[in-house]
Image (cartoon, rainbow, N blue to C red; front, side):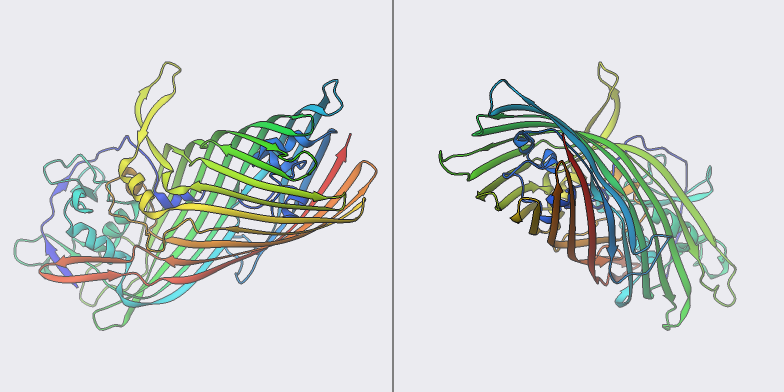
Length: 554
């Protein structure tokens, strides 16, 4: 189907404000169940039981329970089910997960201590392969979505005015025809690629209506194929001070530094069909994105024993937002492998690329924790923890080009994107249950369960019509609405004098719905109403982890 219009020329402009969209940012929210093998083996339910170096990042008061100095190192591997190797990322990958120490000081009182600690741990392991193939159940394609957004006409309506830029010799999307030096935020990088590669025909003038010198067109797709390799990590570096007051009250503070290193590589392939339903070839969107950043947060916690003669204990913790400064960069190519209709001249490009680098700030939500712990003799420990964080309050921020007295660039909240985050994400609950049984003082057997509720509203979607810089800089439209995550864990520990060896196994499973682009767009194609309806595909992310920890008490 074709729509014939006359398009005006335009001039090049630059955008100074930059940000990122809800779905790209959400990948840095929360954390995996990872740390020492004891912590993982008990499902992470050690926030009230304490005396494990991994509690430094969840309830800092847990470090106050150490009575001796301690050091540990953890490493292992992860394996993902039901996928094939892609972009040299295999199903099984090794991982260095934790290294840290606690230095314990007795305060001239047999039951009061002040402790200092440092711990590195990998809070997120991004290694994941997503592979999807499906058939559209309604008429749809990504080039059709780009066509539809142009019909909306302005950023206020979720679109843009397409115009020819005589400097770059490319078609660009602008806010309105009277200001051709200002790009519209809904004009994404993939919009740019599809319009210049396929949607705009400026060669076959004999087929245009009288007076028109360009034509716009789109075609539906029959099938789609998607492959993506996520890789990288978030590394946390925690610095802790904590204490023990008469074995009744424990306190702690942790300063956390966070380092993001993420890379995603994807191929999205559509089989394009003509008006008669016959295949004309494929269009492939190839994208590589890297996200790096650094952040800082503060955590505080307490553990107290409310009953004089009982080892039962209660833990409370709070964590500030992580204040991130981030950089995102991409290189994206659209490959046009479709056939030229008989009697037509070639138009557009066989291949065209787009790349960009931009910086922004991102503030994660506050996090609150409540935990319970109890021991029976010296052979059984039981723990339960609950954490809550409202992901819908995450704050995407835009640099404004001004600086404070310390030469730090100021920023302001991206109101449009944050409203979208509020509609798309929700409060997340994390439940941890764990038990440790010691048939002998040198042997420990552990079991755990960990459940994290869904972060995404089921009807949430990646809206590419938003009037936000985060939309403009996006290079792909796909997204996944992940559901809750179930984790089952088990572990074993053995201690000889001052040396301890622990092993843990973790199985995690998360279901989700993959969408190649936003679900339902309706537009007016020269008087005829058209729809572009995305067909989702179900996903199952199943991962196994085997983790080893070597510890030394001194």
